[in-house]
Image (tube, rainbow, N blue to C red; front, side):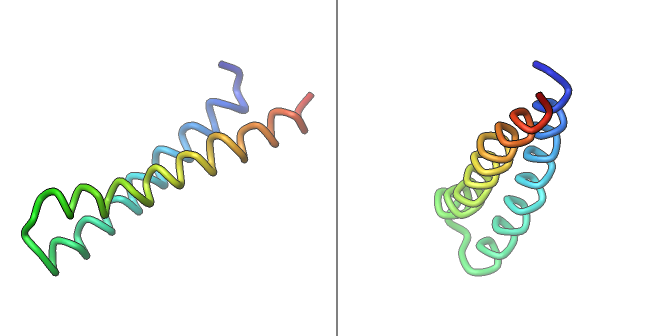
Length: 65
């Protein structure tokens, strides 16, 4: 994995952790159902990973060539 992909992966994971944790806390304030909390946290986290790592990483890698 080259440096551009590594930076994109680190940014994706850190952003996904922050947004996922925030979503989990907001959902936890509304309900105690663990399944709903996990789904509410995972949905934006996976979207961010897909966008940041997949799309942005590939664009940055193509621009870096």
